Length: 324
Image (cartoon, rainbow, N blue to C red; front, side, top):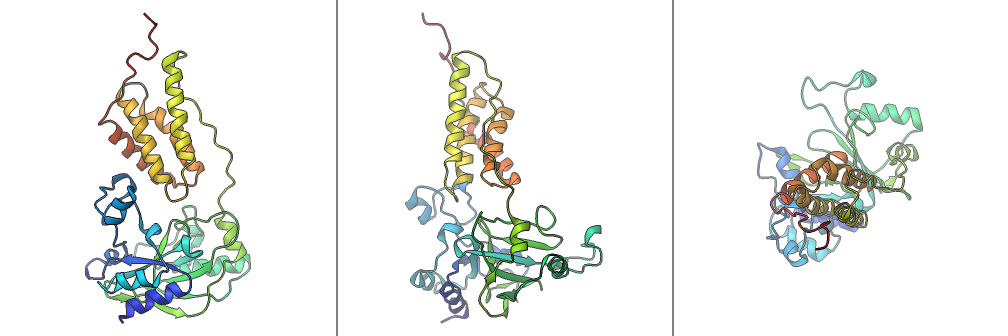
C-alpha cells in the first residue's frame, strides 16, 4: 500500500472527507499539485459533461461533492495514480487556519503588522490579544508555513478568508465551507506536507470564530429595474422575480451554478434589448451576496452568464401590444 493511500485512509478515519489532487509530477510548478484532479479544468458554468460523474448527474459535480470517507472509493482512486490528498473542510467539519510565509523579498507586512515575519507571528499576536489558543492537529506545509486544524463551531457556516481582505491578518488565511487544504503526506514540487503535531483537532477558539463570523444577513428584497408601466414591464418584472427566486432557493454547493443560469436567462433578454447589463447586475448581485457567495466570484459569474445569454437573444415581440 502506498504512503499516499495509507495517509488518505487515515484522514478519512478521522472523519475528514478526501479527494484526489493532481499528482506531483511538475517540479517547476508547485501549484499544479494543489489543484483537484477531477473534473479536469471545468467549472459549474463551463462544464461540458464529459466527466463521467458530471454526465451521470446531468450537472457539474465538483471536488467538494466528490470528497469522501468511503475506504473503497479511496482505495480505487489512490491505487491508480499517486494523487495528492485534498481535504474538503466543509464536509469534514473543519476550519483550517493557514499560516503562510513571505514568498519574496518585497512581500512585507502592512503597517498594522510591522515587525511580523510571517503568518505565525500575526496569529500569535492575535492570540495574545484575544485569549490564546489550544494545541491542535498541525501540518507543516510545502512552503514552510503551517496548517492548524480546528473543529467548526456550531452556528453560522464559516467560509474562506484571505489575509487582511476580510480575514484575520497578513499571511493568515482560513479554509472552511467551500475550501480545501492539501493533506499531510502530499508533496508540492517535491516538498512535503508533514504532520507537525499529531492529535485531535481542537475546537475553534471562540475569539477566532467571532472574528470570522459573517455579518448578519437581512432578508433580500430585489430592487426593481426601471421598467415600463405596461404589459412589457409586468412581463420583465415577472421574469426577474423568477430568476431571483431560482437563485435564492438554490441549496448550498449549487448557488454559483444557479447564479450563472439566472444570468444566462436574463442575459438573453439583454441581448434582445429588453434589459441592460446593469439591470441584471442590480438584481442578481445583491441576491447572490446575501447567500454568502464571494463578491469577486459573483461578478465573474454574472459576466459569464451575460456573455452566454447574448448568444441566444430573446425579444418581447408581441408582448404589450394592443389587441387587434
